[in-house]
Image 1 (tube, rainbow, N blue to C red):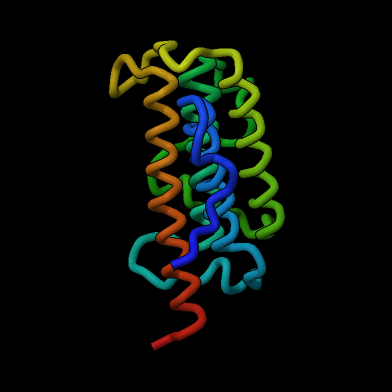
Image 2: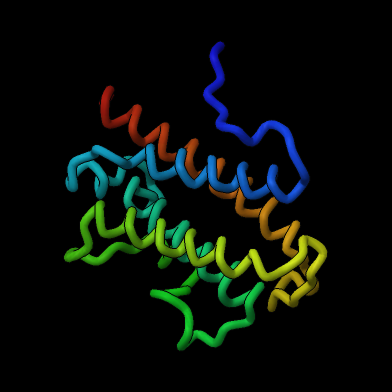
Amino acid sequence: MTWSIPHIITGAERHLLEGSLDRNRTELVNTARGLSEADARRRLVASPTTAIGLLKHAAVAERIWFQQVLARLPASECDGGTTAGDTSFTVADDETLPDVIAEFERASERSRALAAHFDLDHTTTHPVLGEVNLRFIYLLLIEDFARHAGHGDILREQLKNPS
């Protein structure tokens, strides 16, 4: 097996966390990049999960965790929507796959910029979980985006080999 892991295999904890999250962001985008609009929106499972919907959901997660929870920005100062749950997978008819990829990439860039102002041990309050720190947010999104990239890989495989 050949691994194609970028330059994030050594270094300080923060460097490893940021690099791992960036790698999973890239892998998630790559599961949808190059699909047709129809394929990106095709529902192949019972849930509302689609390739484009996974990216929309990830953009919402970026905004919730970094803009609302970490930076404590009011909703009026958050980019785009921050509705969680199944509705975070909803993509408007006039949004294209490149639009949603760009939205996710903008949300990710803003997350990077906001997180740069906080130490890993900085704590903030999540409305359901209570006290969390930036380290937890990184770990949560690394895990979440890795799982969703796996979902995207399976969707892409189903598109190539329909049963």
